[in-house]
Image (cartoon, rainbow, N blue to C red; front, side, top):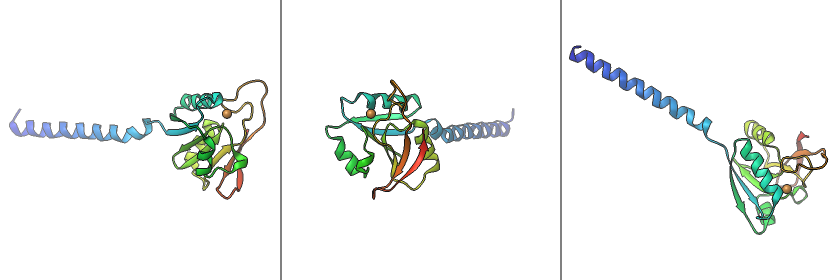
Length: 154
Ligand SMILES: [Cu+2]
């Protein structure tokens, strides 16, 4: 091989490596798990089960135990009548209660103008609330002024 051919080959090889590296970097965000921060009390069993439900659905959960969960709800603008056991924050939205992971996924892809979504109370049959019976329940959108809407019926 002549010297100029060798140089050309080196350049091509360098280019090939650069394209590969760029391609890998572009793929990175898709493989990274969505992070969600969950505020709960240390003794809440159904909160732990809901955290597990999120993890099973690919979320990276940061669980924070707090002594007074009401303070978090007030700070995040969750209307009192929608309160449940745990409050979570994900990508600019507030998630209150036992909201199914599929609904959070839809929220993050559609990105509606809402403060967050909530499952008030703790209906049986919602994720983390498995047991005897199954309640009908709705996932509601909410805003700080107390207005709500139906996001999904279950
Ligand atoms: Cu609960």
